[in-house]
Length: 199
Ligand SMILES: Cc1cc2nc3c(=O)[nH]c(=O)nc-3n(C[C@H](O)[C@H](O)[C@H](O)COP(=O)(O)O)c2cc1C
Image 1 (spheres, rainbow, N blue to C red):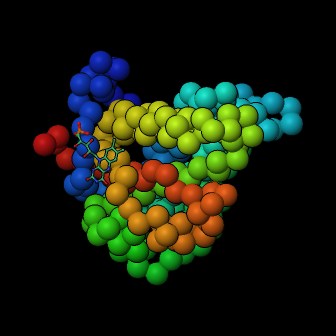
Image 2 (cartoon, rainbow, N blue to C red):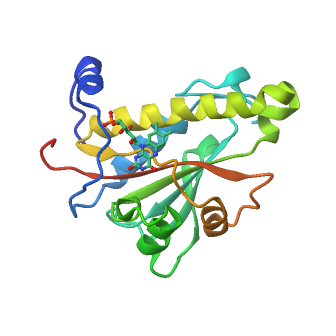
């Protein structure tokens, strides 16, 4: 993995990219993207509180990261969940026609599944609600913006591209992840893949 560009260039070059090459991502690149978006820098002794690479209101960090892996070197395609505290990926399951299933759940946006991997962030509202009560919906979505912005810039820094996706079918995505849509629900999606020359 070669990191390129200083922060000025990365911000300047950032754009939403919806066309990816067939090149796989390496495991190191996937690991870097997970770290950049939800990586844990410091964990309390009881492992309940964390400081991460992204800010979060009250450091509640209400997200889980799921990755639909389609084309990552040496990694079996399937749905995975990021175990942030240990920086590990847990295999969940294989899904038939995974790329199509993801794209369909994004209202047919093909690029959502035609990529090396699709990141899907869920929120566990209670993690913020116990403290911020009525402010939580706003705070959780503000937090999500930070995660995806880091994702954009980290993608740019390794010759990859992404496009934030907010247009998805809530029930379909939640069902793919097997979350209940209440105590845990999908809030943001972003595919990643290698890009050729910037358009
Ligand atoms: C919250 C949010 C949701 C978005 N949802 C989608 C989407 O579902 N599909 C899509 O193609 N682009 C989506 N985008 C990308 C925007 O269309 C894009 O950021 C905008 O056109 C500006 O282009 P740029 O990112 O290249 O500067 C979304 C962006 C944001 C911030």
